[in-house]
Length: 431
Ligand code: IMP
View 1 (cartoon, rainbow, N blue to C red):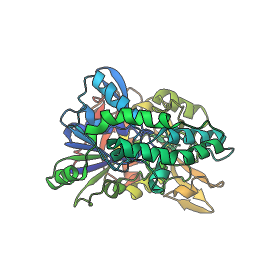
View 2: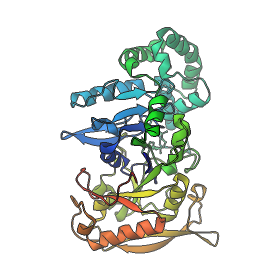
View 3: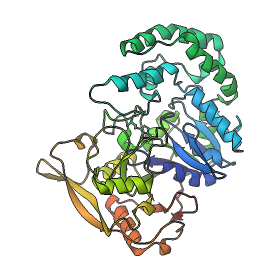
């Protein structure tokens, strides 16, 4: 039985991983974030109040779960402090006993955010539609070996020296993009303020993680974003700047590959994308609008309307293969209830006289790509609150069976509404 489960989104993010993680962390000893930054947004409801978690693993809401933030996460210290503070006002205990931040994680600094926003604003073509959270520039500094890390917050003199050394070059870039340069204190002061608060949380994570895995304890690894936003295996360059695939978790966390682990692939019952880039099954008509309205498809980090479209089986097969998915969770089934008698699903794509069952990311914007549709029947009646397979309308059960068969992965979880109670758990995802 795997003691380690990686939760991975199989589309362009926003598949509902937050709900699935929140639900499964009830059984987890550790919940771990291993990539991305505050571009992620997991909306959760605590005591009737909505909280958006950007950096802290959703497992924090379950008191017996400890949370780790790995070295390949880019941490915006101001956002993190605010997130801890808002969780505490809701009565959630967030102490250094429960939350560990890897000292090796790179910081997102004000110049990263400014550069991200300026570059996007001034791109005449090829805008990525980033979240503006400074993610790309922060990863450039990580791989350029010029960033500031969480460990530097523990040494104010070193921190000040690094920022002083880096600022002129960053300001030259900001000016190049037509922005106002930053002064040293605008960068340093928030870091120093956060340093005192975050200091006790900054501790190595590898030992605890390896011990938990060796002891067969339940470790949940949370992916942010989705497969098609992976910097290598997504629709580059319209991607985020990190590796988002499940197996990347192990090298990014600095631990060996466990003898056994599961990958739970999360799929929304239709497709959405926020930001620019190819989306061949996008629906610009009333169906896309209906999905956006019913599914409340607006970004939880930026509030932007999400682009909506059809389920794309060939793209999902790419994602299943890239992640090594072992089990499937399907979310937002309730959004399709009563939408229409049937819905088209992309079964295959035709390109250059060939029929493709698997769509590679680089073919996503081929001009002569043509869908091969299949009509899947929908169902009447609300799914909200449905917890057992037997209680699903037969149309919904058939839809799910067809999806699992098309992807050749066993279905273990179905989300039938936003609340925790609206979930059919069909099999133990940890097995
Ligand atoms: P960045 O990660 O802010 O650089 O944005 C790059 C692309 O990834 C843009 O299309 C964003 O909309 C998208 N993106 C980043 N994070 C998320 C997320 O958590 N959910 C969905 N899309 C995201």
